[in-house]
Image (cartoon, rainbow, N blue to C red; front, top):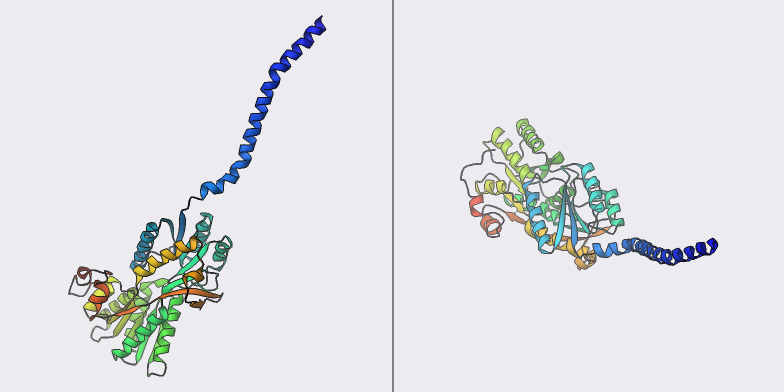
Length: 363
């Protein structure tokens, strides 16, 4: 009797417990299946169609680069892209770290204003290995697998400088106070100048490279030259900020004689000095178009366009690694006679900014 009762109890418990166990097992199986499938859904969730652009710049201390970045970001935003900006603060080491950070952020394209032309090879190789396009912006990055180079034609900048100085009959003795030697644009400026003055009675007295675009150094070099008694007829400057520092030295130590002076970028201080007659000319680089176009190229590369599709002309420049597709924009001379047309009518600077004072700016 007791044995029959125990068997009956077992049957009842089995009938009640087994369905519950089956439901629990089904639930666990469903949870397990869901947990295995969730990683496969992740790429779909991340693929929201947005384009992410990294912008790595060596410094934002210059008026020029602040303008470039503002235009670039505004155009990228219009195109629906997000921009992650990294400012290296004039440090090669920091710029390399920031490039790897952008890689980890899984950006689609990286635009680079390099601190040093040959210092980013390994970082760029890692970006390219992840399928991330790299645009070298305004300064050519050498010995690296960059996708595209976009710049104003810097050799032509040098040509225009030399031609205008010859037109001014500035004299045969020229001094170059350029930017840092590691900026390949300085090499291109000298190359362009050399092409124009070849066979002409022009003597480049010396070339000084301003390390880190440190304008105290360019000022000191100008003072050294002016106080040595070996006075040049013309001084070619790496940019307008260098020209401002050189002009200060001229006014402090040799104000009785005009020395032909030129720079590039059409900074507001340079434009003011041109209308005052203190700087002879600058080279205007269409920065607004350069930055805006580059934002468009960055988005197109992110969406699968090839560099060759962006450069149908097949124009290339060899950067020591390969022949790199390049897009050139044309520079233009700015003098006192055409500054209204080139600078003010284009909206680069306003009339009030350029002509705000008829007195020499305090240096």
